[in-house]
Amino acid sequence: MCSIFERTIYPDPESEKAIMGSVVYCIHHKEGCQWSDELRKLKAHLNTCKHDAVLCAAQCGAMIPRVLMQDHLRYTCPRRRANCEHCGKEFSGSALEEHQGNCGHEPVYCENKCGAKVQRRHTQQHVQQHCSKRLVPCRHCGQRYTQDTVSAHGAMCSRAPVPCPQRCLAAPARDELDAHLRDHCAAGSVLCTYRDAGCRFKGTRQALERHTEESSQQHLALVSALATRQARQLESLRSAVARLSVNYTGALVWRISDWAAKMAEAKCKDGVELVSPAFYTSQYGYKLQASLFLNGNGAGEASHMSVYIKILPGEYDALLRWPFAHTVSFTLFDQSSSPDRACNIVESFVPDPTWKNFQRPSKEPDALGFGFPRFVSHEMLKKRNFVKDDVMFLRVKVDPSKIVAV
Ligand SMILES: [Zn+2]
Ligand SMILES: [Zn+2]
Ligand SMILES: [Zn+2]
Ligand SMILES: [Zn+2]
Ligand SMILES: [Zn+2]
Ligand SMILES: [Zn+2]
Ligand SMILES: [Zn+2]
Image (cartoon, rainbow, N blue to C red):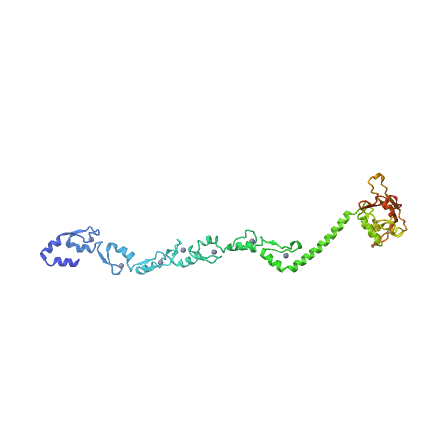
């Protein structure tokens, strides 16, 4: 500005007066200064013009229009004093500019783009511990997923445990469920083939195969014990059946089949004795058995058929009266087709109380009975229909009504 003055003023002192007197605007007219006066007063105006630049009051060296000085000193002068808006610390202007962008208290967006804004000093911690986009390993398969997707992954992760659909206590990994159900599931288990013998093993098919291989000794012992138990049961069943089928009526109709063969045997062998099923005189009575020598014995040997009655040791002997004193009768039936013409053979006796065979029998049944050595002669047997269709019927009847005591 000064150079313009000097160049235009000095060449022509005459015109200087005229120029200095001419009316001009302030050189800062465009910036908004409204001043207008004689040129000679311009210099003085510029000393106060709001728009004219002067050296920064803080001596930063910058030329600043007066009107902006306040702002410069406050906001842009490198030598200004100012506080960081985030941490509150006071800085010189240049230091603040450096500080800005580094202030630990300034909230910044997370670089993982999780959307969170955290103070710069906490970004490390946020990224490592809180950021929803940080990578975390799936605890089942170990693959890394962002924290906000890892639980969705877990719901499908092939290594995540799932409850067994058969409700055993196991929780196999999802990709091992099939194998679990096939080979290991305790709920889908099978029982040992020897369970009826008492083996309590329960397991998967695979485990059962192993068990069967390893337990043959144990299984053998179980089966053998079972056989023993069953034998005992059979025995007690047999005696129960025998008790049920015992005849308690006091009368036995003895059917002797294959008569011809039995007679032939009796004739060629000595002492062939047929014995009847045992029977009781009443439910809690004496136990008796008839015996028959087809070819006779004693006085009837080879000529007669002999019949005897024997007293066997019975279950109620201790409660009964001894000697045995019931009347015993034998009837050989004539099987004639017309009953009117039938002629049965009947013999009976009242026991002699002195005869030892009517005393209470010992455990071993006495071989001897009491009866009729000459019950029917062989001759008589041929005459009538005592044997028909190779079968003979002999009735043995015990009658307590004719006894003296009991
Ligand atoms: Zn001005
Ligand atoms: Zn300045
Ligand atoms: Zn700060
Ligand atoms: Zn984040
Ligand atoms: Zn996983
Ligand atoms: Zn299972
Ligand atoms: Zn077993």
